Length: 94
Image 1 (tube, rainbow, N blue to C red):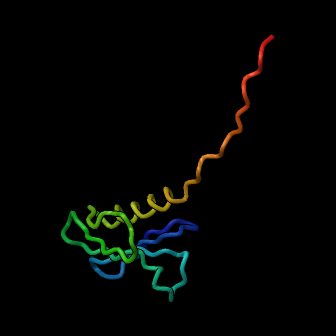
Image 2 (cartoon, one colour):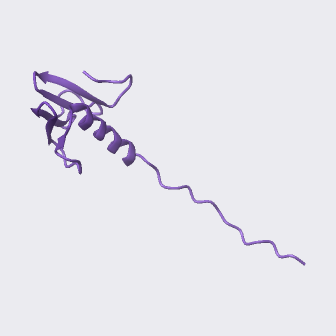
Image 3 (cartoon, rainbow, N blue to C red):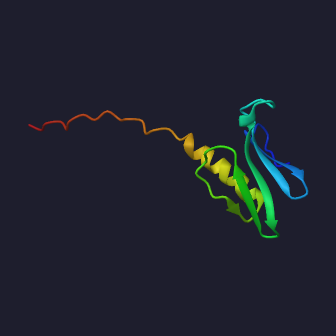
């Protein structure tokens, strides 16, 4: 299991060559909790079956790479719009 304290996502090993990427925003019985299923293709490649419409690749070099990509995508999607700064016209000189 790869998990950080208070982390939203988790990479959980479920079999010798299979992992799940879970989203803890949803409850254990909610099917949306499973983000993707990761399967080892060979020693240097895994394939991910995304359970949501996610604009990410389906092949990575390791389960950790796929997991980190989900975390990066989520951190980008939470970015906020720039805060507008009021502008004033320049002062007139006499």
